[in-house]
Image (cartoon, rainbow, N blue to C red; front, side, top):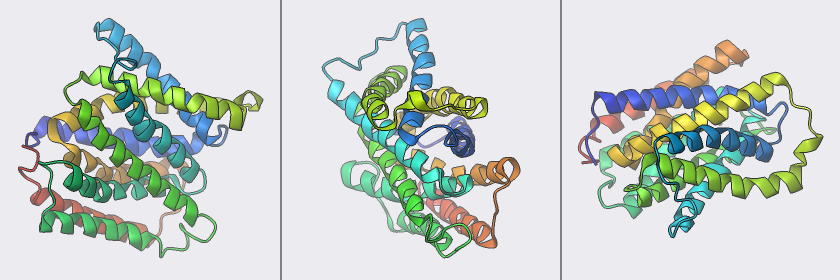
Length: 295
C-alpha cells in the first residue's frame, strides 16, 4: 500500500460525488421498484458495460474459475446484501440521511482492518478521529424530525448495509492481484445470481408498473453508481488500502445533503449541520494521523 497522492484523492472525491448522488436516485427508484428487484436490476444494468469493457480489453472473466468461491462471497457481501439493505432503509428515510449514515463505514472498516490485516492497524489518534466522526452519527438519532419511532429501524438497516460494504471490501483484498475489471465484473455477475431467485419468488416484479423516472434513476445506479464506481473503488482499495478507501464515506454525506436538499426538497435541521461538522472534525483528525498507514 502507498500513501495517497493527488490523483488518488481526486478519485476518492469523484467516488464520493457518484455515491453521494446515488441516494436520491435510490429514493426515486423505490417509488416503483421493490428493494430486491431494485438491487437486481441495478446490478444487471451494471454488468452490461462491465462485460463489454472486459471483452474490449480482452480480459478473462474468472467468476466461475477455481477461485469462484471468493468472487461469490464478495458478490454477496459487497453488492447483493448491502444494495438490498440500503434500498430498504432509504425507502423510509431522507436520502441525505442515508448518505450520512453511511459514514459509519470507517468505524467498522477500521476495526475489521485492524483485526484482519497486517498493515492497517489502529492507533489512538486514528481511532479518536473515527469515533468523533461516528459521534456525529449518534447525534442524528436525537433529532426526532428526521429519525423517529416510525423510521429508526430503517436507519439501523442502512447502517447494517454500510457494515456489509466493509466486510466485502476486506474480502476484496484477497483478490488484490487480480485485474480490476475482472474482479468487478465477476462479483457483479455473482450478485445477479444471488438476487435473481429472491426477486422472482418474493417480489414477482412482472406485476409492477415502473415509471420512466424511476427506471432512469435505476439505470444511473447500475451503469454509473455501480459499474463505473466499483471500478474506481477497487482501484483505490488495491492501491491505497481499505482504511483510505473507507474515508469516502466521510465525503458522501456532504454531497448527499446537497443533492437531497436541492433536488428532493428534503428538510434539513440544525442537528444535521452540527452532525456534519463533527464528522468533518473526525475526518481531519483521522487523515492527519493516517499518513503512512497504507505503504
